[in-house]
Length: 157
Image 1 (cartoon, rainbow, N blue to C red):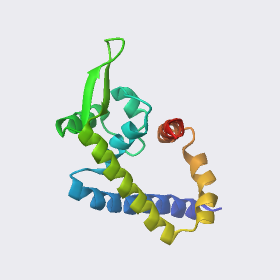
Image 2: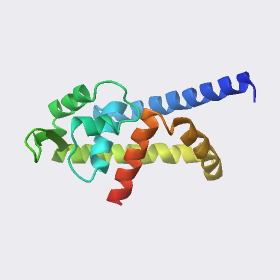
Image 3: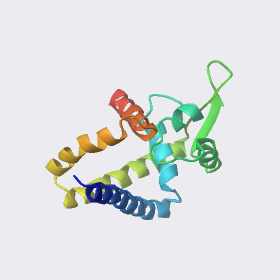
């Protein structure tokens, strides 16, 4: 492979991510949610119990900013509540009833996005791309966050 091939690959990944983010943002806008907020809601939805801000931050793949600010915004919207943890030194976050409703909405929007992708890309193409993308991110923070998310989803299935 040439440098040009790697450059094109990099830009194809970025372009796909950007277009996916645009589609997700447009679908979430009527629900007054951003993609980052939707991801944080999904993290709490997929966890086996309440999480600390740090634990949420360790599971965020797309949001590189401040998880505490993100969670504060969701708390102000009434979608997340904080309570004192079992050791009384930590605060844990969980979805409120409105947050559970928002999580259902986020889940439906995600499913709609995946169905739209299925019209563009065949299953075998996705299967062929997955090992390459996993290898790219495996040792990086976003890849490790994704592994935590997958573990949470498997624990709740």
